[in-house]
Image (cartoon, rainbow, N blue to C red; front, side, top):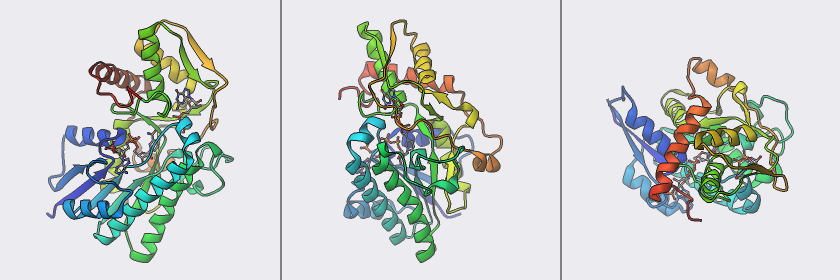
Length: 323
Ligand code: NAP
Ligand code: GDP
């Protein structure tokens, strides 16, 4: 049996570490797979020469492209050009290198914030290009939409087997816990920790009413490994919990309060942006392929993430602690 060398870009990030965990804990690993996890120290993917040098070193047969310039609502609102440019550069270099080095399968990552702001619900995979995304993250959203376009162009011109997944909001161990630029869950875990430590109120940005579907990074990672091994379509697939598992930002804050046993005051800063009200996504396509996939219950995933953060905050090894 020939060996599959699976290169995971973004291997040092939230999702990359999830994939590493899934592969390390898998009971029946296929004998012909070698997984290689890389971060920005191994190659600057915004630079084609650096990208090419890594492909020459690793000689991947498969690529899971997770590297990206990623951030929460407030980072997206202030750095629209960076979100557009860095992501377009990285994905363009990855596509070019995968084609040039004969990679047999490339899986890239979109996000549910690529979908149109004005839409019907639930959103499904056919709606990616149906209208403008929410203004707050248009740099990131348009860059990521191009991944879906590139998959089809590379199929048509070169016959490449390239595809993409569309995860909803993600959280888990190894997240970025930056107070300003992170996503809501890691940002609020860090804020609740500081409020506990300093005896100050725990402040949530915005009204707390927006709705989101959150997926635990280790569940998402298991699904991505399945996509890499089994999914054959060029068209994207949404990787999401069920619609019934959508929660409000206030629910999220209260789950963090519970996991942290926080007893102080909780307040909402309604002068801050709410962003998109909801982006409810359908996982019907995923359920058609994997009807029995069990997602980790939200509160359990939250407990595990908070426990990971507390351990790593004490050791100084959680990302985003000091900026
Ligand atoms: P993350 O934790 O911020 O990690 C980003 C990764 O990209 C890191 O491994 C980083 O490497 C790497 N990277 C950044 N710039 C790079 C460069 N110039 N060259 C090479 N590598 C570079 O991101 P994540 O949350 O795991 O996101 C993974 C994927 O999921 C992304 O495509 C993202 O768009 C998508 N996604 C994320 C969410 C979410 O809620 N987090 C939701 C939907 C979709 P170093 O750490 O070594 O610098
Ligand atoms: P989005 O799903 O792409 O909008 O990304 P986020 O993970 O940044 O979630 C944004 C939602 O969480 C908005 O409704 C924000 O108002 C709310 N939110 C509340 N507190 C925070 C926080 O500390 N950081 C972030 N990023 N969002 C927060």
